[in-house]
Length: 266
Image (cartoon, rainbow, N blue to C red; front, side, top):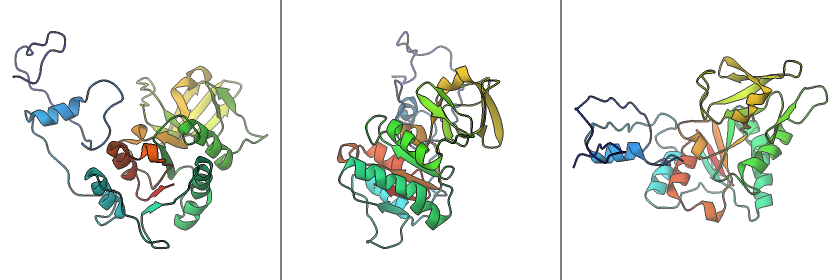
């Protein structure tokens, strides 16, 4: 049976054509939020050639991040360094959600920047398994924004679509915008808010992109983002809040564990 069928007719496609699919991804990451896992099906069909990259560049080959990513894929629990030992993969045990959130903020705001000379806004990324709840991205984004970039009476801000945006805020594009050449998952930082022109300027890498206030529904705060949104990205340091109910799915755990050069879980 030909695995490439016309999805409307369930019949093999017309005259043979050469199709080049160029994609760099990891087979053990999460499937797309939308319907279908097309790339996995193409790989498993064995109809097209597949090249697997095996050399690790994001972390050192003996990094505990790499070791634990493989353990997670094998259905095993991660290994952690002894208390006080040096490691790039650290677990901090807390019992209650409020304690987890408070420890996470302390790690992002104070402890990690002091130890590794990292910028708490640009260099440290919080990854969450969920959107809602005290450990979801909405509540953590507000909490982290108020700790890392508090409101100032002498600085402009704008409140739109459930978020208050301030200069220096870390933000993420949530849908593709081909006109602006900014795409779903791109992370930037607010450079300027112009209340007269009703515009926000966001810097993505070295490029400034201007948004009208009415276009801010495409933007969310990004101090904390979902693990799904982090796929394909890497960060100098990653911190993740975990509860027992969100630790079980290996795809989430693998993606969370492998996004950073250093990784902390609370």
